[in-house]
Length: 256
Image 1 (cartoon, rainbow, N blue to C red):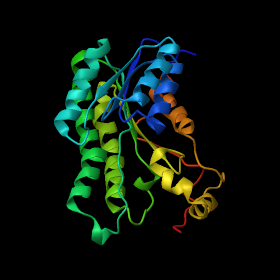
Image 2: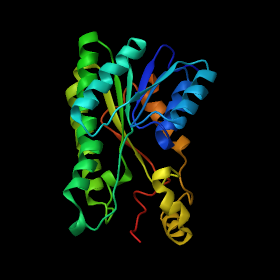
Image 3: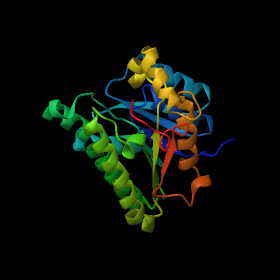
Image 4: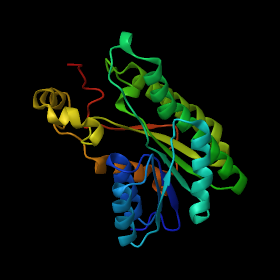
C-alpha cells in the first residue's frame, strides 16, 4: 500500500522508540523519510538502512529542538534534502521527574522549550514553507495522555502537553484556510526507552496495567499506526483533534 507515494516526512526525535516506529511505518507505506535527533549514531544508521531496504529514501539531520532558531532551521534543512516536505511529525520530547516544590528552572526550561517552544517554531517554519509553495501540509504532534490527566511529580511535563493540546486546537482553526491539517496523538503507557524504569519495576508496572482496560502496555507500532492514519488522505476531514492511543487508560485512571 502506497498511501504516501511521492510524499516526504520529517519526524523529530526519531532515533528510537515511537519516532523510529513512525518512520518505519510511513516508509512502509511509500514515504521518503527525514530522521532527526541530537546526534547521528548507530541507531540512525540502522534506521536509514531499514528504510532504504524498503526502497525509500532516508536522511538524518541533527538538531537541538529546545532552541527556536534550530527548530526553524531544521525545517529549511529538511526541505533542502529531497526538495520538498509534506508531513511534519513533532515527536521529540523530554520529561523529568521531581516533586513540584523541587523543580529547577533549568529542568523547567528544558521541558517547556523542547516540548512546546521548539514545536511551536518548527510548525511556524513549516507553515510558512507550505503557504509559500501552496502545499497542503500535515502536522502531527506527539502529545501524551497527560495533556488530559494529572501526573504527580511531572508538573512541567503536564503543563507542556496541556499547552500543546491548546496550540493544536488553535492552529487547526487558523491554518484551515491554507488546507493545513494539525492533530495530536496522545500515547499512554508505551514500551519505549523513556519508560524503561517502569518496565524494570514489576510492582509498579502491575499497578499501571490495572489502570489499563486492555491490560497491556502499548507498543510503538500502535502509536505509529495512528500517526500514519492522520498523515494520510484517509484523515482529510480530521483536524484539531487528539487521538488517545492508551488502551483505554485516560478515562479509566487512578493515580497509584
